[in-house]
Image 1 (cartoon, one colour):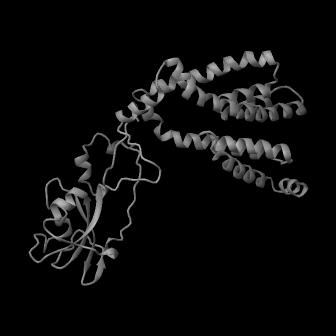
Image 2 (image 1 turned 60 degrees about the vertical axis):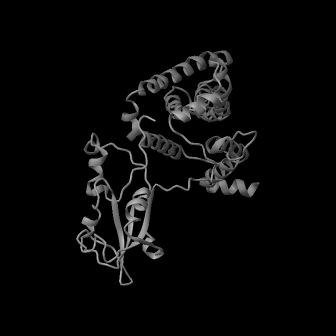
Image 3 (image 1 turned 180 degrees about the vertical axis):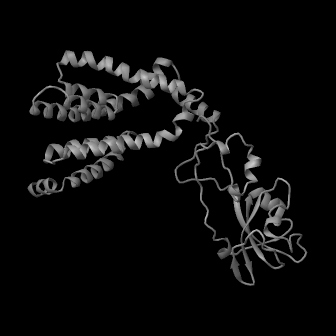
Length: 341
């Protein structure tokens, strides 16, 4: 134990890594269908490491890491904030005001009844509400109190202790309220209501590791026959063979050589084309006009799926048909749209 204590004293960052490792390992353990999660597990592991070993952490490091935590939250939420406030967003805004006000009004008389000092009071509030940012605000306020350094240091240390203790109770309280107490007060069957909501939003339940065999967008290889109507046409012209049909030629094999086509490249008889599009178009339209072949090197084309947040005005208000005709949308297919959840 002494060599571990000496190691953590010299390299306090090792204490952080150790707490994270233990916390995430504990947080993923399932007990009666319940898991603590990585955040709560790391919090408990940090308490354990701090109780067993002396790990010095500078005030500057605490401030920097805490500010990074706040920045990360703001950076994640910022792009979606304005759109989230539209429609029913005011409900979440009202809830965001209601929760801290009620939490403060409850914590105040409890702290007075238990005669808790400012540090324990602030930690109890932040832990019970599982709102870690309150710890930083409380620490700044405590440092401004006209007290001696030893008392201020003790109060500041009490914030973390009370937060860690109450965080578990706060997390369990939310779980029990949402799964047991809330449904009982509202007299609803939580399982039935959840299934009804899933049906409303078109959510289909699948087990982990299982996916649908149906692929709506595919890339297949076809050999161009001598009598094919696209012989002699450019790639750009061949991709517009039918009204309302979106087909894209990704790669061409000609005389055994793989080529990346440009829009002005002319298609010759005997070419093998890697064509991408909706499955029903490839099967119903091209399948009746060309011979499909198995050419793995030709079809070895990288693809990617992304979730795109629409925030620029140049893309809003346009019909999808108009966007699909733009060069920026070439070979891009839309899987779904999420709007207000």
